[in-house]
Amino acid sequence: MIDMHSHILFGVDDGARTIGDSLALINEEIVKGVSQIILTPHCSKRHGTADIDKIVENFNVLKNCIAAENLKVKLHLGCEVYLDSDYYDTIWKEPIITLAGSDYILIEFSVTNTPKNIPEICYEAKLKGYIPIIAHVERYDILYDDNQLIKNILNEGAHFQINASSVINKEGRRSHKFIKFLLKNELVSFVASDVHNRTVRAFYLDEAYRVVNKTCNHFYTDKVFRGNQENIIANKYFESPKFENSKKGLISKFFK
Image (cartoon, rainbow, N blue to C red):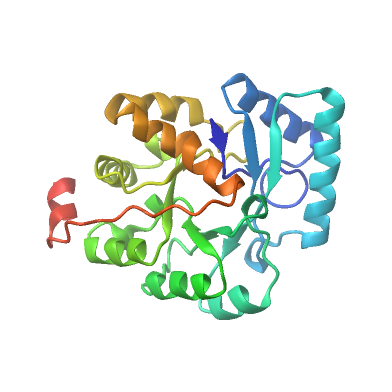
């Protein structure tokens, strides 16, 4: 497996605090079948995160430590970009660390005030040359009963990422049901850990793999846990899923 969303990089956001924390999380990922990790610390004033220079500095320290310990894992750097009403300035004027040096960017929105113009935001990101991936899409309940909005987002070439913890039903019943709907229709491009620590926001990617492999076909499971992540690392473009059935009320019926 390849983990493309994690908060393992120490001392830069609300994830790992020390390099020891980083190493403990990395060792757990290795033991549970992860061969490559994209470190995606928050990069926004909202999270009070470190500046990009500090993020790069700590990443290089961690990489050197991994090499010295001879750990069998490859690390890549990225970030999780928070977009709000000032999204235009963020996309066009602020430095953004893309995923593994590719054109792909990982973006998140407010859970309580999710913008309804997500397709427009994705379009703007594409104009700048980015390929948007929406992090933990199951958190945005405005999508739960708006299949036209889902369709419009995917038609802009955006990808959906879901969290392993939600796949195994640790984040709430409605988000879990929404994930089941997305997986059933193969609208998810990535499953990731979004791991922050070893307690309340822990690593469940191996458990999620078993759930998805049991409910979906093996080919699709391999894509969302490894194959599509390899496309990011190789900076290889691939089509986002398309939601063909836009019949009103489809998601409502699913939830019922």
